[in-house]
Image (cartoon, rainbow, N blue to C red; front, side, top):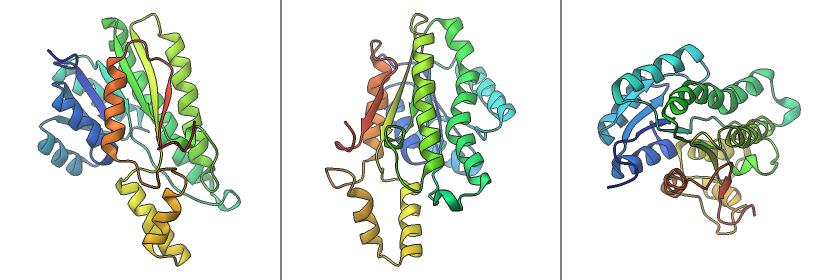
Length: 251
């Protein structure tokens, strides 16, 4: 019997990209899965495709998060595994960045992790077990130009990960993070379009520039991130880790 069999896994940002890939592997392993996202229609379509349940919520809205997590728990039981994957990424020179971009980036990428973890942690403590995996970024492990808000938020995610890992180490709960490099998702495809539009480069040139930071010279696949998340959930001794999935970009 699979370790994941019957366990309730909730994945935020589960309607596409890395989140959808993670949800798919959990289903394959026998878990009961809930995906959470802002777009109700997009989420419902992906839920039908994967054979999972869905709850619409904006991770920056605490009332929506509380309602969605309560509904997911009522339907599928206590949340055993939480994957905080929802995120946004926008590039802007720091001197030109407006306050709204800063606030929005931290609200989704950092406060959203806080909101969702707060909503799930009580059930895990009552059960005496749980797994939390935060999807951060290589931008959580090093600096990068033009993404100050994103780097700050993702560095914060690693700090939160390590603090909670230490706090709950003897409560049967592990908290880890994965740190993908540029991954073949809709966000990166949109970034390529934006680079091509604003710089006059071809899309191929824009892609070559992005993958140049990866020693393997390629985009990471969502399935590679998903495999690492799944592996982390099974490893009781892995706690407080920030694992880079970036082809050697950071060591």
